[in-house]
Image (cartoon, rainbow, N blue to C red; front, side, top):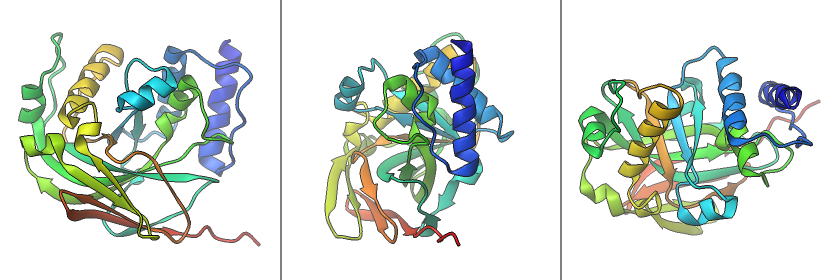
Length: 261
């Protein structure tokens, strides 16, 4: 089994470096092994985690994957771009998700007791609107739960949009959110789709890291708390807009891939 995990890790590393899709493995790892692969692939970049990504934060999608809890992914600062940026289309499929993004203003203390809402609120520096860009490194995005986790929960990048607040406010618990592609079709959602309250998603992440990684969230790190609008497939030359409570908060343009000679 270890050789199978090593082969999967090497395939994902190659896919990340060369943009060549990895084949689905013959044997699927367990959940713990999948997170170990994710962790080692991230460590190979020698870049610290700047963004923690939460996936499967909706009850329906967790049921689809047979998951009992959300999934976690991690990305470096180089994967974060500013509002109204242009990003390249990469791979065969890409998806966009409107998300509430939290920024830490201070380190959480590593402690034995579970973190609470109060702990998170006291440590926050800002709350932003954002657009998460997700894609798979495999030949298909139709993945099992362990392969989704090994694939970094399909985390690819984040468009960090407008600062909505310097602190948590209960209005963020159930705020209308809309994602619009170039075709003008709006996908309506809500922050309440994220574990009933996106603040609870951040609390869950803090406790997951404490229990599974012996790690505490750090100052300046960002948390993409989970999709408010589902995953919407996007295409080259699209312009994607995300609005929170009726006001546009993030926008990104998708550049067509360069043609190889």
